[in-house]
Image 1 (tube, helix red, strand yellow):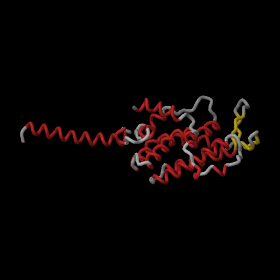
Image 2 (image 1 turned 45 degrees about the vertical axis):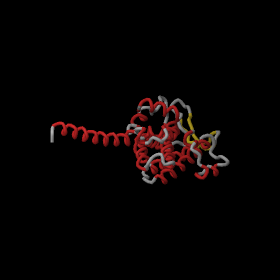
Image 3 (image 1 turned 120 degrees about the vertical axis):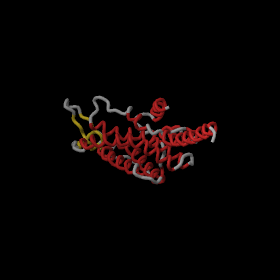
Image 4 (image 1 turned 30 degrees about the horizontal axis):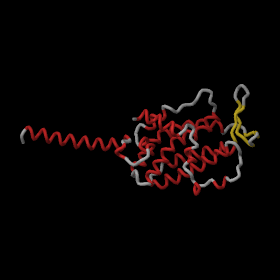
Length: 238
């Protein structure tokens, strides 16, 4: 083989290797080419650094107390589950593969693990608080050292651990259909929470079921607007 042929062969081999590497990177890094028909949210969640970047924007404001953190944790988790929602919709529409949906689950799990840890630590404290009748009815009541009382309705507080249990159950699933069913049930709990936050009982609660599931039950429950999080992450991950 002449030297020239060796060079040509080497170039071909390197091109093949580069192509394979690019394909792997496209799958794990969220390249548009790997999912050209997917939503912008799904494309972003296909980035393997998704949780690392999102976690850098998650923090506990100064002055937060266990009951406020317990209440806000599921709102923050909704900001993560928005990406699972779009990925499930893209999967159902045939815009992404099963492996890509599971990649979204993998890439977003880090943020869910972080939020679950924060929630569990503060929920444990809140569960020790007395239940006192307030204007909204029975409420878990927190008293700060200066005497200020913070409280949330009993039903709202007790629904939050169920939300996180189901979220973490969903993240153990490998079947796209089961993931979406769990997500819808989480959406139901989010919608119930919006009523329980103000009142312990609410007429029409029986109509909030998976049969009437609306994506807005997740999107509108976000602690931060879904669009603002998307814009911030797009700036950081692209």
